[in-house]
Length: 228
Figure 1: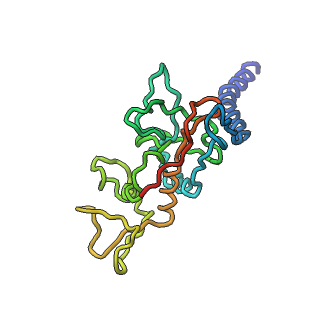
Figure 2: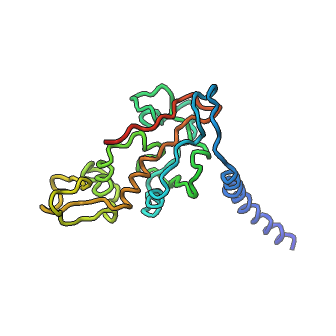
Figure 3: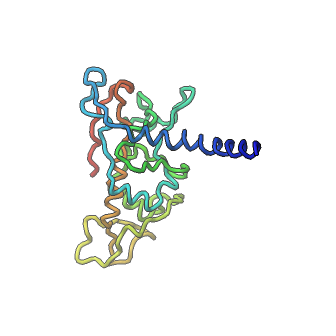
């Protein structure tokens, strides 16, 4: 009986403690979070952190389409001052930014009921994709026909988010322009649906490198330049 009790207690400890430390405590901490005000004198920034909410409608499409199976959204702490997230990972898009992009904090995901941190990095990390994203039409082309941009791409095509239809007069302004073997038949056009537009809006809203009050160096939290 004593051995059985010890076995049960050990079983509870083996499964209960990891659940407590990895699930319960982080969830309680996250639920208690609220925006933090910047100190203009110390941080050089006004307003609240985090200042850039993500596009929730597009995030729902992102989750439904399984994008988190291949793309992560988390820059981890670096070790031994070795930083692999300098080049093009944040607001500073210079070839060698002066400051490394910081690792993410819980507050970066404030307002997201489910933060899609991802499983593996089969594709690029998308944490700050909004800063380095190409033009909107290029993202649409990437989603509809990834190999029309990179023949080596193993990204799946999300053609379900687009409508292939017969052109009524001139080709629509929003129609995706493909060439060569990827081009549609003459007289047809590929038009993004509202869901495709929402997904692109979400990708462009991914900016999680704003300065942390009292911690990060003062960096102006300027909006990203408009995509043409």
